[in-house]
Length: 223
Figure 1 (cartoon, one colour):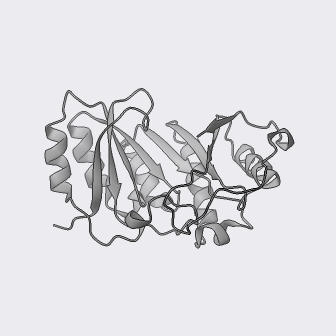
Figure 2 (cartoon, one colour; figure 1 turned 90 degrees about the vertical axis):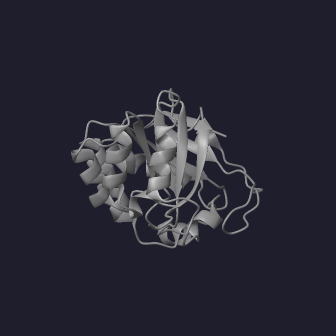
């Protein structure tokens, strides 16, 4: 059996709100975001654990953990239907972190009620999407957003902000896109942290002026 799981974080209180969870880090990704904090995972072809290893781990955590976070890399590149069914059978809630590039997988999981929460990353404006992600999945992201909006599931949209990559006008444009697609929840913006990343980015010397932002959505800033 392939070791498609790069690693498992056995315990977290912050990655899935109101849940004591573990994080499952899946190998590989179909984007190469300049600010990506997980270059080893993104470029990995094989990890430490198989799905059987994961299930054995979770069986020992029944009653100790509430939830399982599926992250990466990009978790939706893998056969999550089987994985989520196995996790759900053990009684855990499931949160998916995704870049939105696989709307078909997302829809399958939602139709079969195998997810409890989704965090979807809005990488950038359409014009800057390829430059930042080295991919052409902008329209796939919009399709995933539409699926989430019509699913009835709890979900959030989040963006990582590096001032050399996105400015105030970009964030305003992204707010407008979200509103036009029916999103009316908190919009989470995560400030870039200077740590190991795919492009060796450093903190920007530019000043991001929050006063220039439109108020179409309630922006929540995360460090």
